[in-house]
Image (tube, rainbow, N blue to C red; front, side, top):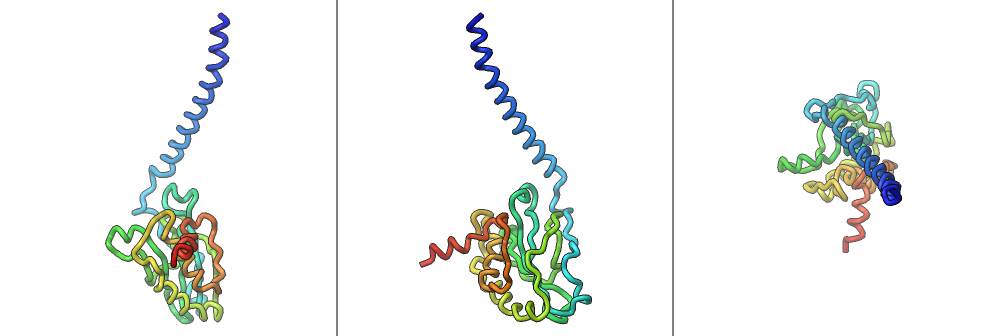
Length: 201
């Protein structure tokens, strides 16, 4: 009887801990499944979030830097960043960004095109990290363009540690400090430039 009590006292706490751990793991699996089962990047919103000024209402130059949660479960801890700009009098924005899956299509990962500046990032609403307008923005348009086109890794992409979309935004911010962009901690890959500089001869 004594031996049975000893086994019971030593075994039950272990069983309870094991059951708790299994419950937590099961809960995480269910949460991940619930967040992803209906996700489809092909149907996710890419509409304007209404954050960029309409060119007809803002005839002056504009530069904005955006961040939005990354696609799928990655958005829990990481963001995708990009830059949009237009000169005075322009009716459209130029969007500057790096997109990883372009690499699989044999294309440069850097993308510089006329586009909607403040698109949802596949269902995730962006937020504005920097907003420059008028003469302040106008004087930075050429340096911004030059920095974007001199990005050192136009054909390379790696989620971690970089180079990735946040590496690109960090590069432009480094080359054009007057943008005064402070990237969030979740901009994984933004520190890749520091590693690259330290390893360069």
